[in-house]
Amino acid sequence: MGGSVKSSLRARHPWPVFLIRRLGRFVVSLAVVVTASFAMVHALPGDPVRGALGLMAPPETIAATRERLGLNDPLWRQYLDYLWNLLHLDLGTSLDTQTPVREKMAQLVPATLQLGLTAFVVCLAVAIPVGLLLGIATRDGRGRGLHFGFGGVTGLALSVPDYLVSVGLVFVFAVSLNALPVAGLSGPASFVLPVTALVVGPAAYLARIVRAETQRVLGEDYIRAARAKRLPARLIYLRHALPNTLTPTLTVSGMILASMVAGTVLVENVFAWPGVGAELVHSVLAKDYPVVQAVALFFGAGILLINLAVDIAIAVIDPRSTIKES
Image (cartoon, rainbow, N blue to C red; front, side, top):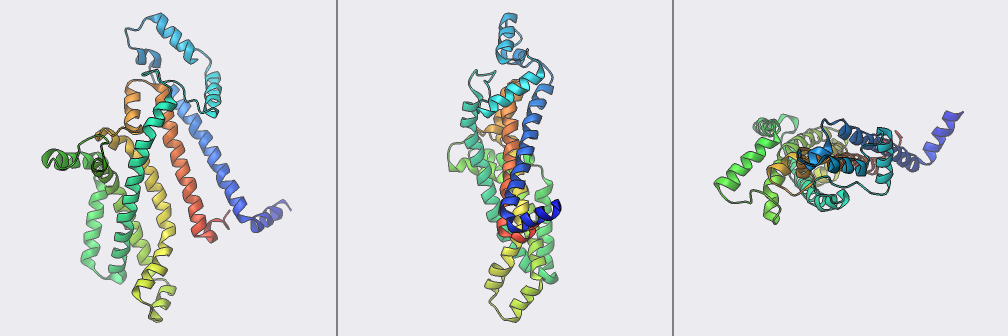
């Protein structure tokens, strides 16, 4: 009886049921991320107060700082205080600079978002047309040279680690040719090298996915029917083939955006980019645990938001596969 009522409710109101389930999953996952970021920081070895104030700090200063930060309280009490402060958007105070972590994050997050979103847009702009054109050119076993060339180039791009790409770009374009800025955020030219370092591997992977999906779609009956009607090739590829490659492409694109956000930690440090990733490494070395905790929460919550947005976007593009499933 209960099952039939739920099925009827899903059938009559698929969108509200879908959104409630996805938002519920997001809230539960976010609670896990919050708890994990708290546990991770408190599991790190060493005394954060002594690490931040230095070995020569007076014992009374260290004791006063520990008391002020609540580090002498039981762990469960610290966790409840952490949750309460989060609800009030209070991320604590930096042990290194004695400034509110919220203000520091507000200064760093825009630079990281600029870098990550620019890289994501460039990745889509390169990978989707290339994958679509290669899928058309190599369909039904055609263009074997293109097939092997594409596989070799994308395989090489996927096999080279991000840090090697970053170092190679710095050596060639910044040091040898002196054509682009080597570090920092100082204008549009400063985006070229870090964006390229972030894009190479994900663009190769996404182009492979788009090419494979294009070849699969071009073998479907409705494409053959469109050709039998002698529709122009432009309409067949752009109106019929491209939209049907978007659902799997969008899923992979969400994963790529999430990996790019996480990948900024390495790239920002190589290019001295003034963002959250570079601050994470500095804060770990300085044992500035409130900042480490805030950065870990930023990356975790960001990836969850990306996954939520991708789920909703897929439901909009292909309601049959997602809303009916919910």
